[in-house]
Image 1 (cartoon, rainbow, N blue to C red):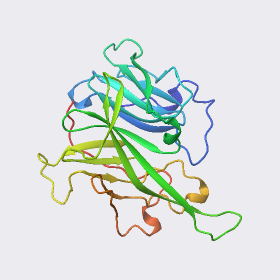
Image 2: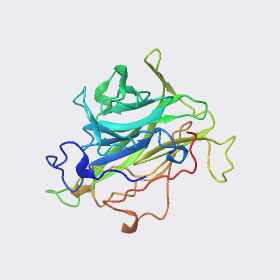
Image 3: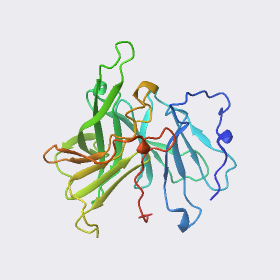
Amino acid sequence: MILPRLKRFPKYKGYRTDPFCFFIKQAVLSHNPSNGSDFTLMTIAYGSRFLAFWRPGNPEWTRIPRSTRCTFRHVNYYKGKFYAITSKGAIMAWNDDDQSSLPKFAVGIFSIADESFWIHRQVYLVESSSGELRVVLRVEDDHDDGSDDYLPIKYYYTTRFKVYHLDIVQHEWKEISSLGGDAVFIGSNAAISISMAEAELSGIQSNCIYFTDDFLEASEAEARMRGKDMGIYNVEDGNVERFHGIEGDSVSSLICPSLWISQGDKG
């Protein structure tokens, strides 16, 4: 599979960014390319301002017109539709059944009650092993180290997560306090859920969220901390266990943030 170059994105030449942002933030497939060419690759691009997709045979990327001025935080494929969530917790979805045109807008915008709560927080869409669509909200706190009164260095740490079951029929959210035996893995380009009752994995705890550092928008002043906010969060008791041995600079990278890698594909 050979993808079109970045310059094939519409209006790519007119797009300007800074060294601490990425043109493509996330990419997700509708189906496994190994099973044929009938698939769509959806991306969050243009500094998270737009969604753009590509299908095999197309010479360039197609940008989806934006119906909201919010930035996009995460996108995932779920039961024939691409679902995207914005920085204010609004959910949008597109059908991917018409391969000759833009994905059809399928679900209107609906969001959690207090939109201000979502600003400056990372959020993920993940399908549970039982087939539910869930929203995982990551809450990070920061503080100054006090080393410089004029340019304090901010350190950020994930302190907790909130998990919601999303009823896409009734457009309702419901906070849940258990993952039902699943283990969830989140990173800068992935959000996957694994049933620990079925997986042959040792040392992985159920009802826990394993997270890597994906604060890609960290400023230059915060770069000292980048790449170190990694650990395990227990959904049931709220405890956070930090990964050990990550105090050095070797794990921190501006261009290659930590990722979870999964084998296989249900599609």
